[in-house]
Amino acid sequence: MNPCDALRLMVRQYPGGLEVMALRIGKRPEVLRKELAGAEAFKLGLNTAMVISEMCIEAASPNCHDFVNAIAAAGGGFVQLPVTDATSSLNLQRSMSDVIKEMSDVATSTIEGDADGVISDNDRDRALKEISEARAALQVHEMNILRKHAVGRLAAERAS
Image (cartoon, rainbow, N blue to C red; front, side, top):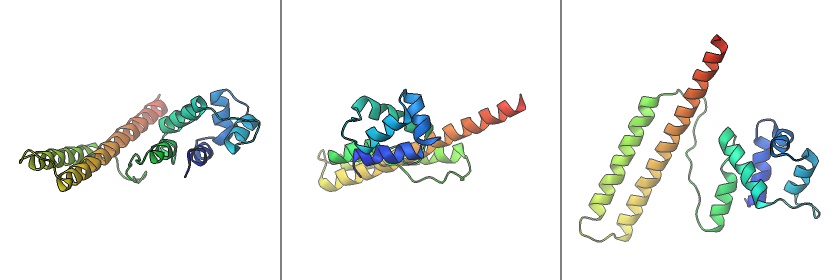
């Protein structure tokens, strides 16, 4: 997926869709639609693309990281994100425990890999795998905190 395709998908899946996104960034919906479509007389600038990306990430809308992944992919990398089930329970103790376990694995792989003073290809690959797993655990924990906060705010608003 290229960055333009990613932005089109992200805007479509943003809460309220293109019309709300256009309103929030100060453009008419038809202008934003043409910019996203790549119409010849309309250019989607980097600043607008970044604002769209930031808004989608802030809203945690589906595919909100597609633009940054598409940009990173052009440089040979990507931002690995876990697949989470939005209906799963919000167990902060469990997700925090997973973070601690994964960080322990990072520490162990780093210490063992550097025991001889040289990081081999296998040592590097193991450490990077453990770091990736720790990053995924942190992202799950972050999403659990945000979701639990949102549930608490909603309950408080309904109570008042």
